[in-house]
Image (cartoon, rainbow, N blue to C red; front, top):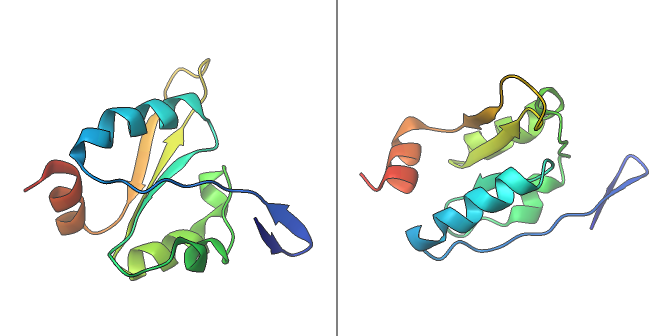
Length: 105
């Protein structure tokens, strides 16, 4: 739980242990509209980034995204709802990190 600007934000997290977890992660992202994926380099604390605030609305996350990407992380948001014509994922992060972490290259 984090408090900012007199608002309370609840969040939960999991640690990804390997590529075997990808299927489960995608299932969570598809099932929970407010969920997003945050990949951080080792040694960085998730709560450090969440303190700047985060929202299910991507446009409201500029400071959060800048902090994550500036620290070498990746953030992936699910965009669109089940009845929207276009749905998918929007990601922010360094290309080399995305290629390495998500594609194993």
